[in-house]
Amino acid sequence: MKAFGGTLGAFAVRLSPCMSRPQPRRLVIDGAPFICSIRRGPVTADPAWTVLSAYGAGRRLRIRFDADPASGCLSANAGLATGSVRTADGQWINLHRPAVMRALIEAGLAAADARSDERDGWALLAVATLPADDDARSGASA
Image (tube, rainbow, N blue to C red; front, side, top):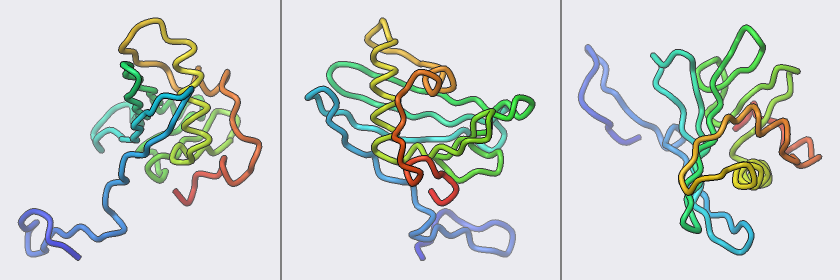
C-alpha cells in the first residue's frame, strides 16, 4: 500500500491499489474518439450524485444521476459501488461497462443541442438502448 496524505488521529491514511480511482476509458463513437470517466459527489453531497463524463469530437457531455431515495433511484454514496446506479424499478446498472457507456453517450449526444451539455441520466436511461446482457446490467461488483 502507498501512503496517502498524513495521519488521521493515530492512524496513517493509506490508499490501497484496489481503492484507486478508475482510469478514464477511451471509446470510439461514430468514428470519433471519446475519453470517458465516472465520478461521484463528495460524501456530504445532498443529493448524492454520479456523473459519466465524455469528451471528444469537439463535444463535452456530462450525464448526471442524482439520487432520489424516495422514488427508488439510487446513485453514488447511497450504499452503492462507484459507477453503479439503481433505477426506480430496481434494475442495477454498471456505468463502467463499455456497452452501457456507449448507449448512454449515444443517447446523450442525440438529445444534446449544444457543444457543452449536462443531461439527466435517469431520462437518458429511459431512451437508451442498453445491452440485453445481464452481465452488462449488473452493478454490484463494479
